[in-house]
Image 1 (cartoon, rainbow, N blue to C red):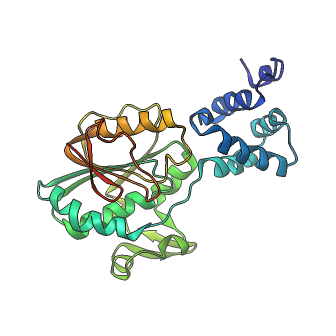
Image 2: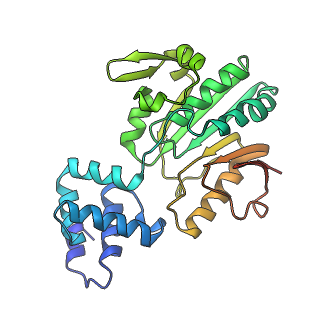
Image 3: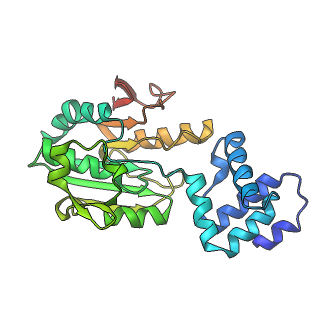
Length: 267
């Protein structure tokens, strides 16, 4: 059914029809998010754009790329920064990476990487802590716009505010609009467009998976399914790090042990 065809259907659930239309436009599945919170965010935003009827707003999204960009910025919540929540990165640097690097290879995945701050933080810490290890560092996000930005390795002054001074000097250089990761760091990373809820990562492959501040607004079923997928992608002894406001509710059922705050290890 075309987007126009949605308008001709009985509107028993306007929000559900809107979600279906958005998925066709940009592959973002809003039904995976907690409905009450997401619907409130969207209706408030659409009303502020002068389109209180959601299907009227959907029509605007379909014909105005700039408005679609603004909408995606609102709903995909691309909030990040380098070394965000420094105590988590201290745990990674002092407790996790040294163990992984001792084996000579670190495979890491930043799942829901936004514009790359998380993966560049991982890359810098790995190079500082285990400089001789071979690194395979991958980031993925559903939003093509932020993936493009991630590949460029560009960051604002605000993104840099938690970077240790020595790491800032070593890994970043001033750019016209802020800062840019140096080529040595950019060469360690690769970024791909990917829907976490639909993707099939390799089984027992990664040493480290970071999925931070990505599932906050997911509904319970989507969150549990994603955590099980992430756990399955870890090799035995691999690590999963989640955001500082998140937890893996069923971690014991999917083979994860809570070892440090917000940091789990595959049994």
